[in-house]
Length: 296
Image (cartoon, rainbow, N blue to C red; front, side, top):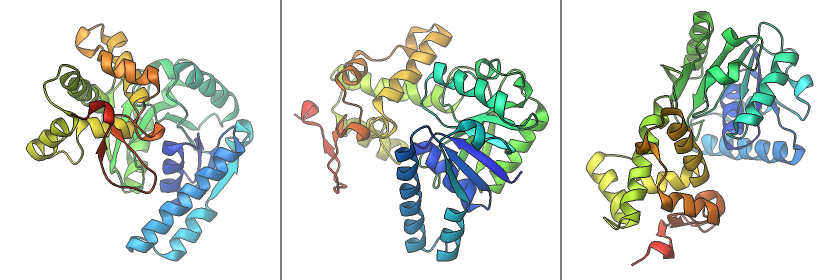
């Protein structure tokens, strides 16, 4: 397995392309937007420069990594001779089903089709293809070049050989694979999102303030980042979407999104990506400043 295609040039897509290319794989990064592809390559280059500065890679590795990446706006052309496709498009079920129908049509018959979805059913995505045995979840964590975990999700029809191949491949990327089964939220988000939602509910109900909630979880539970800051980092819209998948999938009211989260997303306060969520983010500043909406 030497040729890889990555669908989507956003944060996750460029990170996944970066990691594969750094480990010697020829990667085609595919996106319908040429400017998005150019921006992704700039991001990869900056992140590689950071690695060189820290001494974790050499200048030669950086140069070769960039050389291993090609950009493509046409999906059919980009996947015609690959062994693996990793889809990392927007977390939208209709879009993903459409992409997988196209991948099934244009990728080689023996190619494995993986999705980086954080919550959408692998079984449902696989059913959109004529090769459900070759469809699997490959859920990387953000930031991809740094985080070690890859949550590997078996769909109902995923072949064991496909699972074993993806486990071995993840290890070649210096990642730690964890294999789970296909139920709403898998493991990572089934546990994480209710915690984030409970933190938001605690704020909503006036139990504690933003900084206090995050400090309790960082100092008391040894979390590297508090749940509200993490929600901002993930994107409050993404958190809401995953909670809705959990709520719809299980029909259990414990997964119902907090009204405060719903209001914040409706108003466009999405966290880091919009400049404000539970905290306010200023370009060039690393200070953690609680949003004025939650200040005493």
